[in-house]
Length: 205
Length: 230
Image (spheres, rainbow over the protein chains, first blue to last red):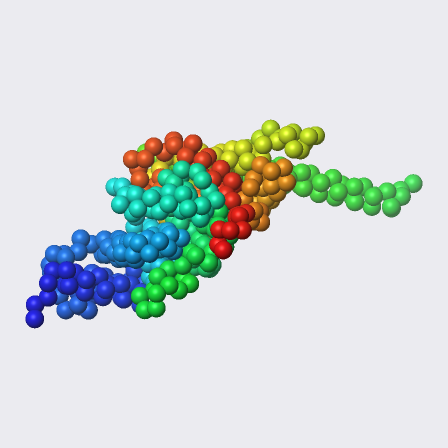
């Protein structure tokens, strides 16, 4: 059965991710990926721009995955878990791909001269409205403008990701971010800063 | 009458005289060498940075630096271990910042402002060669990013001191311990640096943004009314 464009593209991304994790980003060539997927180089380039762009795709996909979960949590009026889910998409991907691959990704982004990592605007709008709601319901103590709180969270998120990647993953990324967010939001503890797992509803991340 | 000891003493004296002269010459020699070394190293640094700025870090080889300074490659490597070292050294060498601190009346100082000013001073230094070279510097860091921000013991102790005093006089409301607050501030600084590096369109001079972020961290709340989680 012929695979659809999206399926084939996904196969390439998944295979590449596996190879990167096994051998390290630098030691995997486009040819290696082609061989593992049983495709030719020209076919590869029909689906993917470059080896570097695969990393970006893996990362962006992971970030987008959290959005349905976040919206669902919000509908259930679980605002803090919704906020946490939206903020930690990047952390989940980072922990999945590991610090070496994350470092390759960051270096790739830094080497590109074009602007590459803008704030995700649709996510930003959603997050700011969640923060506003949290403030209205007095669930957080920090009453500064939602856009400032969001910015603070994003910069903190990125800074921690960088430290984690360049220091060889020597600290617990999610725990550090949670501890900081407890202070910044102004909540009692991190017990509501949890993720939604696919199998059994809400679990502590 | 000849005193055999006199002769002896003279010989010993002469020997001492020559010896001390030799030591003196050697000392002068060392001093000249030391000054010479500093001159060469300084020249290598300033020439390299200029070349990096003109042609881009990636496009400049050690050979090219040697040619421009007028030294050989072995001479270069006698003083400097790698090209990355030049950049790292530049960014670590943050110009000293001397805030006006009122030591007589401790509580009259604005410690939050002192923290912000210190971070701003560092950050201006990081951007002083432009975004591209700062990017190259981050990429070249293999030992971890804690050093990236001039995070040495001295800096750490000063910051912890400011945070403690700021908390003592109610200027900083974040109730975490000072080390955690400092970690948060450093993470924010890094995240901010990264964002500026990957978004060249953003105005790099947007330092007031950094200031509000720092204030955001220091003023973060942890004391919640009891009914919130109940």
